[in-house]
Image 1 (cartoon, rainbow, N blue to C red):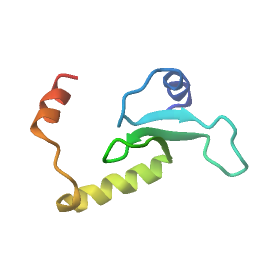
Image 2 (tube, rainbow, N blue to C red):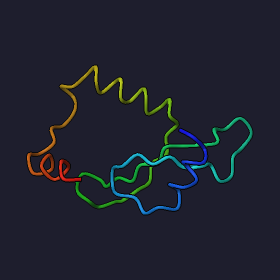
Image 3 (cartoon, one colour):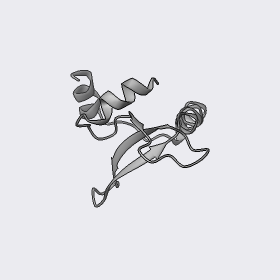
Image 4 (cartoon, one colour):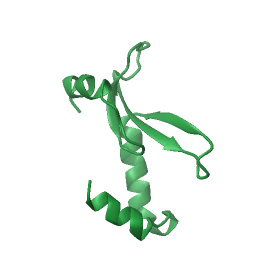
Length: 86
């Protein structure tokens, strides 16, 4: 992900669950200059939180999910139809 792309997206309004590249605003020594941000809700909607991952962490999580599809919750039919419209 290019740094200029991350800077443009950073100021945009995001949707829940979307992976958004963001620039590390206050990088520490040896830290990454970019992260992937994901806004999530708890399963019951009680807490909304922004999660920050490195691209390597995202790649590992995607590989883990692809290797263990039986552990991934199913997406409801209504959500599938809704996402096709996006």
